[in-house]
Length: 285
Length: 267
Image (tube, rainbow over all chains, first blue to last red; front, side):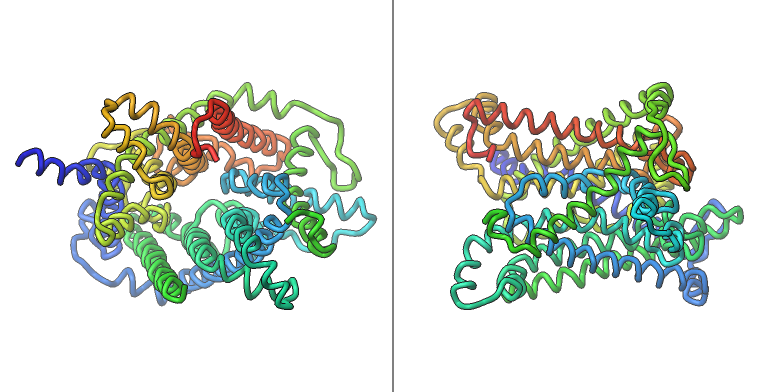
């Protein structure tokens, strides 16, 4: 009896450390973020729960600018990463060129911080691109894209990391689809482009959606890229949350945590939306 | 399916992609070995190793400590991921999906929110500095390590090991002679992924760590906005080299395992 019970309990015991780590930190951080966002900071004698800090965010111009800016950068960089990543995956699968796959793997190994150094050295004023333009005998007249309010350097950073990530996830799927379906599509009269768009690309739709979820979530709430390559104004959500939380006026901590809570809501909301899309996709398959 | 079957525009596009990915890496090498490249000079100035001298004199210890820390984080994450993956495989599909969702949550939540949210909880528990940073690194590495280990079990199953045990093999011989040769490559991939996640953490160390927890990504941060491209490039190059060294060790071991005639696991 005891042995049978132990056998039943064994999976729970085996999974416990990993589940405990994931669940306790997730719950601890989410509960604390929301309770502080709701104004519960007993160490500052703030013990009354209120929605004030959340409501004031949506009338705060700085927060609104920051939210739209972060959403725009995340949407643009995710969209471009998926489109360019899919194109690169197609080329990697079609060429079978191992060297190209190795080159594509390099940005994935780099951290965002190291990748930010590369983007800065390449695209900032007097960086490599500037010198190549000068070497070609042309005059550099464009604005400095690093630290600009357009967020171009941040988008480039996320593209540099995101597109190869999507490409490496899709390449094996595309290679299999090309082996099994490409010849049939060509025999039926499809051109190269329509074979890619209607036969090969749909086989990787699920991976594209999952990849897009991971990238969008990260790009929306990241700190490193925005903080070191983005402009001082507007700031991204992650940067704004930390700046607000660390203000000299300690009561602003509740506002900082409210911004952090909004980031969690966005992350979970996008996860739900994407998982619905994935389920619909699975149903279609 | 090879380069010859590609059309000319496809070949050109592939070259364009390779150039776009290589351009930042070329800048890394150029600025690492050439001290200055004035705004009016067409070519970089004289070669120098001063950036490397600065790195080895000032931050080599931090770099090694940071790499060792990430290796430990990855190992600890792998150790808790393996039994979790084995346990989840033996559960009903609905329960498994629910528990999998819990394990994937760290991948979805923003590191900024988690670090800010958990900091006070950790402080109340008396968990500060290295311990707190270690746990959070494991937390963020867990979904990636777990998913790789889990997919490895899902693909190859556990039948070989069960068969060995049923045929009378004791736990350790079955583990070393049957289990490891099959799953070693999956474990190594998971280990490397965990290492990468921990190695590239910035915000966790920046926000929760003490002066002892300054890692490689943190020493890179002030160099981005600084004007010395040479030092910034040298540090990034060393960052890339140390990461690649770990990758190389993993791939080297794989080849050795394959030569020994391991199993299909090496494929």
